[in-house]
Length: 154
Image 1 (cartoon, rainbow, N blue to C red):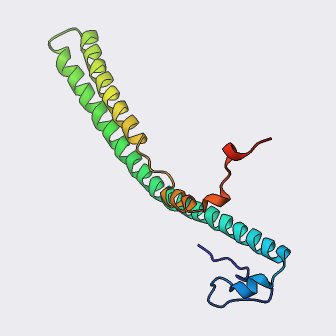
Image 2: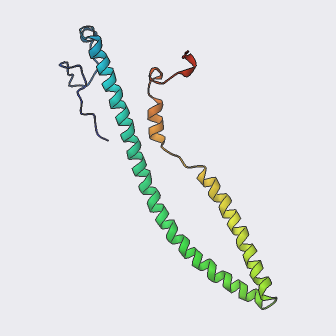
């Protein structure tokens, strides 16, 4: 993540350590300078939060993309195995019963398997973690900066 490029102090009062201004420096500043500094700090904070969210999305996206590719390959291999095992089971059942009934039995077995896999997938989808670091960081923004609609009257 990149650091802000703007100065950390008021116009000529740059602090190399990046620390807060002293009380005398604040008293010597105009209201406009103080408001400009607050606005600059808020703008920098919001840009940093957006950059954190972008970086986190890229990182999680790369992991998800790689996993999806591997699952795709494994899924195709599993599909081929399931296809040939289904044909083999159909042929085995065809030796002892009507071919149509044997095909129906194999189809019902696959319907049960599909229902179980769907249920497992739904449970896993509900556990997706989202943007944890960004959410934690945004939670640390002071309450004074968050809107409080219940206290607003028109």
